[in-house]
Image (cartoon, rainbow, N blue to C red; front, side, top):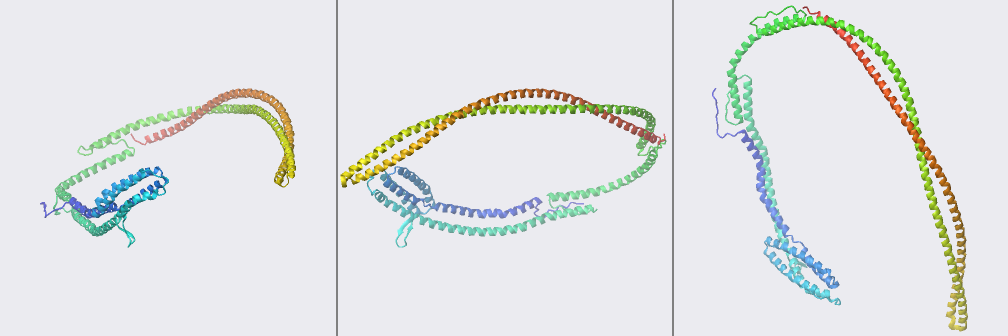
Length: 619
């Protein structure tokens, strides 16, 4: 069949179609970036312009701060004011440098002129303030503040007019300053931003509609352009599979679909070319199959006889039979089975005879092992009783050792307690002596106080006599001595009160003296009692130490006893373990004998069955 490879106009491959489809889907994003980037740049530039035009209010506040510091220095003369003012002017210069470039980047001539004028006023203001700070200050001059204010007022007013604008009495506001010009610039740029945003919104809506349309149309068109050739190739393949051999296959492209169609065309031609060969092979296969069926019937009949136990017949093999080798193998296998059957029959007879002999010996050996196991069990029981007795003895020895150990520990604690009691009593004795000495010192001090009160009492009596004499002299003086008489009366009253107080103090001191004497007596008796207690406790400590030593010796003896009993218990346990091991070995051996006997019985049964099975075959 002729090949029709017709090329009609421009042909687009599947890869190109997929590339075009997905590139079409990405077009909205590309257009969006192309149209929106300039608008975004405009908005960014306008935002930067607005940010640069937003002059902070720190300019006028810094000017007012310098004036406040200057007035503070004029009032107080604080030397730190100069440092603060220097630091403030450094900040002002930084702000000026930052905004100097911004003002010229805006591009407003009026704004630049006002900024230049403002810059020119900073230097005179600094010079005037520096001159005021460096000039000698008269602390007695009350007009220092007003003088400094007058020197800088004109420059400050000019700078404020430039920043905030000139004051208008008619409107009551300042107009025409830097702030006003910046406000107009901000408003103008804000309008530009709004216009750009509206334009950007329109572009965005248009691109969105365009993207939606492309998203709906392009995938459908791409799917149709790919699906149609694929459906055509599937249809051709289905027709060839159904048996058609003259399908018209037109190849229009050299892409993957073209190669697929070319492969289908080659496959159709190859199928047509091999159909005659396949028919010839089919006839030959049928003849060969009939020969195989006949040979297999003959071989199956021979196999059935062998399976029935007849090993006497052999196959008659035709030299032209295609399965002659298999027939020879079957005859060889039959000969081998006959020879093996003869040998197995002889061996099975021998096995039956030997199994009977072994079974008799195994029964005798099993009886001997059973007697031996009984004797070992009795010995193990006796050893376990001995082991229990030794363990009970060891437990009692351990209990005795623990009791001795605890008693020894308690004796040590008692000794320590006695020593601590002795130390405590000795400390109490020292404290009793200290108390006695303190009481004696108190008695001496009370004696000294008594002497002092005696002197005070004597002085009070003398003052009373002097007051009485003064009263007499005042009465002699008549009217002029009334005031002196009143003073003398008060002095006499004070003297009487002092005399009464000293009498009370002397009584109290007498009571304290008697009490201290009793306390000294009691402390002396307590000291004697403590001495006696120390002697008794020392005797008790000696007794406890002797008892503790004896208990320690008993504990050591109980430990020796425990060690000996433990060694004896270990030896008994080893003997018991050995007997148990012998018992386990005997039990294991007995079990092995039983298993061997069961195995011999099974072997006897197997040998008998084998003999019966071998007798089934006829040799």
